Length: 248
Image (cartoon, rainbow, N blue to C red; front, side, top):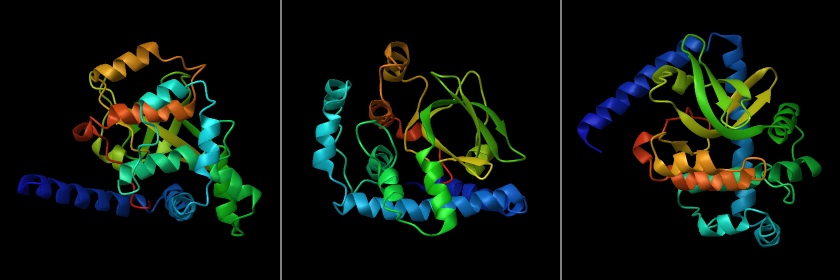
């Protein structure tokens, strides 16, 4: 990284920290900070559960092989994910910590069934994670003053107003340069936020345009959509939206 980029990143961090300081006075931002911290703690536990081998990959992969998207998933080298790559780990956690295939239990479901947590707020958030919504979104509105970003699901047209300090600070809606991202939205105690899956896509990407045109949403699965969009996004490193992921 050159000096100019380092300087730009330093200035960005200074601006972001100033914004956080001003926004922290708002009650809903305090609530957001609280649940983001709890979410990070839960994900840390889940990552250890998955990476330490407590989650039966072999058994569940056999179930995944029954999925209707199997042949497409195999072409994507679905399980060629490395625990040494933070982006790969993000995808691995998304695929198995949350519900993405009806045949495969998520770690969230396992934690709820086993009463993993006793803390009331952790249990509340765990239930919200189990009811969360994942999709390919287009950003349709950004409220700078209040740190809100509005997502619209490309296929279902459902909208979600999420808190995102970083995106609301540095991004803007431009019809000629739309922002697309694959993300999961958690809603808890009256607020919504994205988990920050590392799947951010350049709208000009030919593979992405082909996917939008040809994808059969009704007969597809979240598991497949996550993998194929991650595959596309890996070639777009310079165009990725930077999430506010300080709690992850």
